[in-house]
Every structure is written in C-alpha cells, then in structure tokens.
Length: 295
Image (cartoon, rainbow, N blue to C red; front, side, top):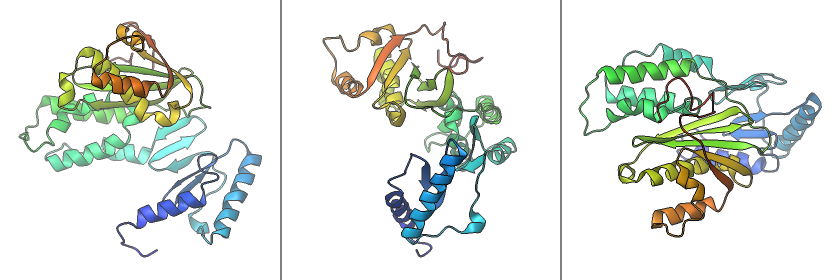
C-alpha cells in the first residue's frame, strides 16, 4: 500500500479485520499493522501462532521477523503493558508526563490532556479533576493560570504516576457497576469479583446542567452501559447508585421523553439497579478513595 494516502490506515485496518475475522477477539487482537496473539497455556499458544501464521501465508501477508516477538509473558501494546497481573500504564509514557513543564498556552493544555486522557480509564473522576484545565482550552475563556489549574495539573500527573493495575475481565459474569453524578460531571467504575476493570468519567454538556438530580443519576447509569457495552451487553450485571428512586425506574408509570428513551435502552440489558449509600460506599479501590470528589 502506498505511503501518505489519507485513507490508507482505514483500508488496511478493514483488510486485517476481514482476514482475522474468524479468530478476532478469541485469541488475536489487530490494530492496523500491530497484531497481538494471546493464550492461556503454552499448548494453546502454539496452536494459535500456527493458525495465524498459516492464515497470513494464505492471504499473502508477511510479518517481518525482526519486528516479531514470541512467547512473551509481558508485552507492550498500544501504550499499555499487559501481563498476568493485569493492565499497566506504559512506564515510558509516565516518565514523559512526570517531566512535563508547566502549561503556558491552550495548545500545550490540549497536548497534555490528549496524552493524559488516553489513560483516563486508570483514573477515578478524570473529567472532574481535569475541568479547570479543560476550561482554558475554550476560545471564549481568557488564559489565566491560577492555583486551581496548577493543582489540577499536578494532581493528574501524580495520579497517572500512581495509576493502579487494572484487572483483565475473566469471563462475562459477575460484573458490577458503581455510578455517581454531580452538577459537574458523571463518574462510574466497572468491577468484577471485587477487582477494578476500568474507570470512566465525563463532564456535563451545557444542556445537561439543567437536568434534575434524578435524570443526572440515571444519565450516569446510561453513560456506563454505553461505554462498557462490549462487557455488559448480553450478560447479567448489577448497577449500584446512591439515588434510591432509580431502583423503581421500571415501575414508574410516568416518564418524560428523555426517561422513556433511557428506560428503553435499559431494557436491552439484563441489569439490576440497586441502592447503596454514598457515605457507606463499599468500593475500597474505586469511589471510596481518600478524595471522595463525586459526593
């Protein structure tokens, strides 16, 4: 394929997806020209390697031997380090964040948030923490670097340097989602058997700031279901919220148009919504951390 074509990555990605379709997400992951083959045992891995290499040979696609690594117990892939313990942030990326100088322009803020945002799944309430920085990227906002921006900058750097190890999902059972909302943003945590799989958060859009507390809390549930659809769709899961009335959302006789759309989406999932007190949150490694920013 010629270099420099705008649509070359999309075309090549489509080709690789079609070639590997039979085995995709069973024991192989493909991202453009990067291929990761994974297995639970040596015997399985030998078979998986053979199948993929034979498949590439049939399709007349060739892997350069000098760029291949085999039989690894730990691998760097798409900015992450993956091993038997779980998923880690790539240490080389952390070093770049740790040494990042103070931001002086909106462009520099966008650059920093671009890299930091790639690892947002490792940070509880990323959007809430980044809000003072995000505001300075708006054209209507004058660039004034104050203490709250410096605090947000340093907090993000520190949290990325201390990022936890996220567990890899095991099977498709026992998923639990903890959701929370405030008038600044939505936040949620995906867990499986008391292990954190991922964090997610986002700031509220302008029109969402007019939502009632009930709709904000329900919006947090919908946000979680959409962003983790690939984990939660087709499997039974439990959703915890600190808004009691959401337990009875399916029994309510009257809904506004927004709520009707969301209830219809909820019906696509096999989920149970339960109440938990915000002050008695049992998620030790997630929302109940030292700084409870979403209460």
